[in-house]
Length: 167
Image 1 (spheres, rainbow, N blue to C red):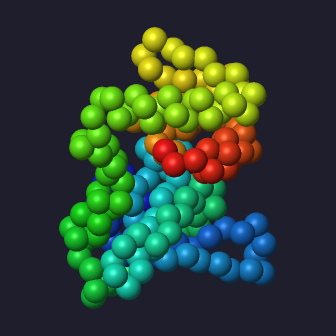
Image 2: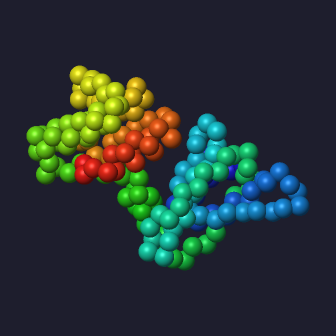
Image 3: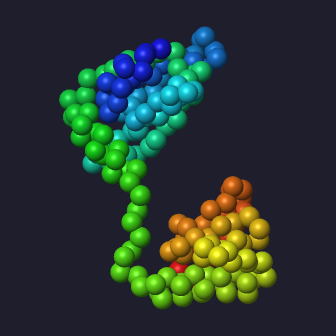
C-alpha cells in the first residue's frame, strides 16, 4: 500500500483500485477520483464524476479490499479543479437567511403540532430541539433536512409522515 505522502499527492487524481474479492478467479476494479483516505483504517473514498463534472457517486472502499492502487492520466480534469468540485459537494448548505426568527419558530411548531395530532410524543429541549418518540431529533431551522435518528426505518417513517405537510 502507498505511504501517507504518496496518498497526499494523489488526492484529486483519477485512480484505479484493484479490489480483493476473496475469489482468486474473479478480478474486479473500480475507478474514480481519490477524495480521501482514513488515517487510521486506511480505507479509501473515491468519487465518480459525471459529464458536467459533478459528483455522481461516492464510493467507500475498506483497506482490506484494496489489492493495489494505480494513478491514471486524466486529460479532462486537473486535481485542483477536482478538489474544488469535492469542496463544493461537501460544503454545508447554508440556512435560508431570509427566514425570520418568527418564521422558523412557526415552521417548527406547525410540524410539531402535526406530529402530535398523529399521537406521537414530542419533548422540547431548552435549546429548541424537539425529541420525537424518544428517538428522532428535530433541530432548527426546522426543515425536513433537520430530522436526525440512528434508526433508519424510524427516520424514514417520520420523514414520510411530515412529507404530507409543507415545512
